[in-house]
Length: 211
Image 1 (cartoon, rainbow, N blue to C red):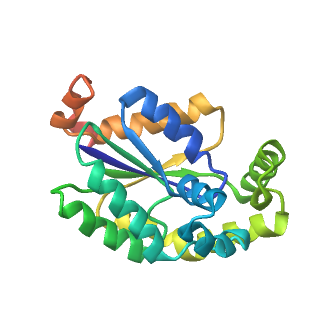
Image 2: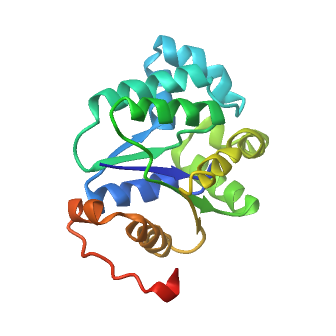
């Protein structure tokens, strides 16, 4: 089973690319942001607890997010694999995530990081806000705060996975298809022979001069 962490700042295109990866590889997809927004709309206890954080551009508490992921893993430990979009966002979440997967004899296969400049991120989010009507995507100060919080609390997660040899940056500007091609190239080069068989991909012949 393949477990891909799709990582990047707000507005980097994680949701769009995750949907294309689901279609191509038949993976399951979890977006913690989508789940939290749904809980807020439904007025659940979880939604009420995290709403104030979201409206201020802050991250939801680790404990609450970990509960969401633990519940998800309990029912998604079979099949081809999973795409985790928006998780983990902090080092404690990443550490807890590794432990959750170990209980199922699983691990993170790789992290794909979408690298997009700040100015482009702000423009993308403002456009998304106009199209969706989302309040947190329409206030430029909230958007800038989200990016700042991301850099302070979330970007260090890349170092966590880099230390495990699982961090792979991808240039996130260009057309959706151009970025998608870069992502799939990284994923398919990383897969083991067994994992490539799951996706019906031909085995790669690795040239020793490339190593």
